[in-house]
Length: 311
Image (cartoon, rainbow, N blue to C red; front, side):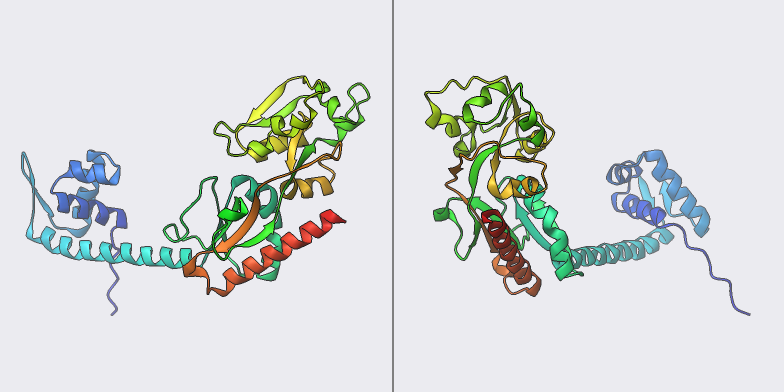
């Protein structure tokens, strides 16, 4: 006759027991597991009842493992260690398989993410992780495969490929162009409208603010109807799409919205940015086929984008 298999206690009981046995304290175990002392005590009591043995000698000021407790502790600690190591290896393997890309927040939301579906059509099984950050991340240390940097050409990393440059020009919701009471045909007409500003307290993007763009028009009265300020470029562009004012568009980031009819260009004057967008890979990822495919796809998309704009 086959013996009925005994039901094992829940894993949480063993975790609570292992922590209590390691510290010889229910209070320290509770702190480690983010539980109350009484919750750990109840777990140990339930475990003892299910196993039918006493695991601890409870003394007024300390705990002592019984012989059964010592035996269970050796086994539980080893098994939990193996489980943790296995989970870490699996997590590391999954992360290493993902293609991690870093770029600025605005580039991710306005240019890259809307186009990712096209890359996934080319590589349906690709696992892409976007690590958008306005600070420069260390590719090797933070296990990043591809970086898209917006910088002056002389500061582009060795081996980087230029995607495109950038032009700066005013953009607004198409509805603002249809208001006869507030014309928007010449730069001087900006005085009828709210200007949207990107905060740049340290002057890192001085070429992309209204003061620089308006400088050649110094003889023109350009008093405006107010201002809205933002600390992220994509937020400012969303405000422009919603008709809340006039923003300075950056050509690679607003082309798609212009093509879709969500933004309009009221007049043609533009200024060139001294920076450009460059893509490069980490040394440890350069030989991965999916990384090479992603970079090649980025270059094709950038070329297609520029050709569409010139037409």
